[in-house]
Image (spheres, rainbow, N blue to C red):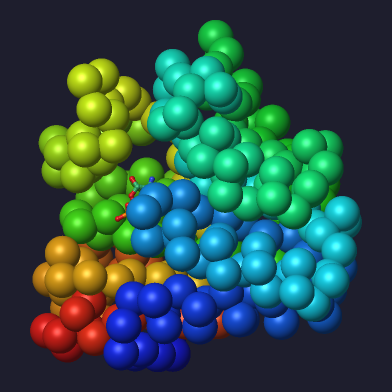
Length: 240
Ligand code: GLP
């Protein structure tokens, strides 16, 4: 595991955006695993501008989303599909046939998960997977207790996740279930990069960095990945 500590959250987001700019510039057919969440807002903002400034076309880039809430339509403002369209796909005109998501707006979730795993396989696997982390250590929506070899599946969200995502939903209830890539699915990416910023992530970062690999801290599984980088700001790094 490589750890990069930046002074501010904004510098950490730019650092990740620069890595992604470099990976996309070198490989126009890159398969990118994309994350959502507040931490990623600044990453996409900077990356979109960098790609535009450098006139790098993304028409062959393939993107695979980590997770999706069950029951939200793709047009719902809190669906991860909406988020990715807004922050990343539309500003870069990434063709919709190159954007993939676990389809959680269907009847048969198991079939949707199997299809997604197959789509990743058909593309030749994910080259770079970017990740945020929940305050309880979740990656994607693999909550504590998720198996290290888990695949894409239906998950129930913990009260801690419901609580931290509540502010984004205003009056509405946060969906209680979701589809997520499994930890095993994530670990198959050639490279994994996790970005965590802010004081609220300091305690879980301390457990990830200083503790052992432990199913109760799902992100700790990444420590056994052969190419894993953890990018932090000084606030998130303050307990390590
Ligand atoms: C959300 C997302 C995760 C994200 C995490 C952190 O529930 N499903 O993919 O990494 O929680 O979110 P934030 O960046 O808003 O703290």
